[in-house]
Length: 122
Image (cartoon, rainbow, N blue to C red; front, top):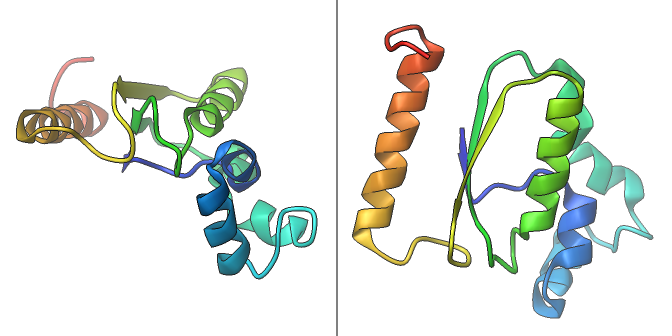
């Protein structure tokens, strides 16, 4: 399970704001053109073939730090490889707008975990 997740550092960089691109370049000591292997090694999408558990991601549709497109690409690849993935999109940026949204996400994660562990029916 992940909330406001990073799935693909290359796509994240491409769709991030200029300010966040600067942050990522500092974090990786270069841009994706300069450090492609580092961005690839740091991306969960690189390891999709090894995923064996169900995945739940809770993501803001308008996030400029963890853009929606990188989650969409991850979801497409997971589904193409027959992996189970659920995405809960919320209409905000990098974080929830209200306490009710935070509570809803916690409830959703608990239900997901209970189902994955076999405590609730699918």
